[in-house]
Image (cartoon, rainbow, N blue to C red; front, side, top):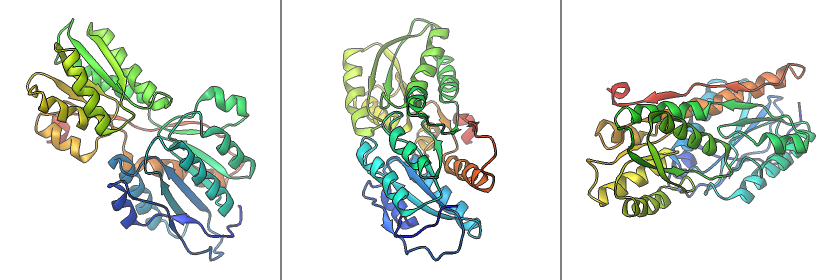
Length: 322
């Protein structure tokens, strides 16, 4: 186990709540008390996204329940596109001497080199949520296990449910996430799988960078450019909410259906109200916990085989929310 020497940057539960407004910054913890417990760093994407604030809260709750087993530092970036800041967070955690890093990378390629350097320092690295690029990992000589859902299968489930409410030959559009993110690529492919099987045409597909405001603008343009579309398929729930606002502004709430991915509370409300058709639940409150538990296992048994672990992803419709 690595020895923890200096200041580390943490995030209190109050900061997690503030993160929903996009203003969170890592806070400073006290120096290690030398208790010998492993120190795990959780590094996520934007805490302005409810999915990641929920993930952080789930991790904090788990640590409180297992306070005698490990210590936890939680960090997140303000903007999911701020790759430099996420790289810097990894470097800070390496310098502080953590024993393990559990990371939801903002980019599938850009984070690999710094994570390889962390491994070279003897730190256990676990990849959650967004899978790191296999070719870049191989090029860097890094083996980093992925703990997370099959995003393609999850997106396909949601899109198949939507297809059951559409007709062959209907036109739909897709709001993609960041195109260099593996999970965004896989969700788009899952949507495409379902639409192709149902004979439904995707007439436009654009990246809204996972962001609600961008999704609102792009969806508005799509509605204008493609007046016959019957649905908007959003690769996360923040973009689904942006699309929902655009559909309402266009006066098309009754004839344009929307799906998302993540199962945030705002989308659950929209599903109950009939404004969004369905989403996928990848159990965000437990996703970091799965990664933390695997990191602790590898710390306890360094000789155990390192392998990917698939976690659940479930279709959420109004029936599941009743």
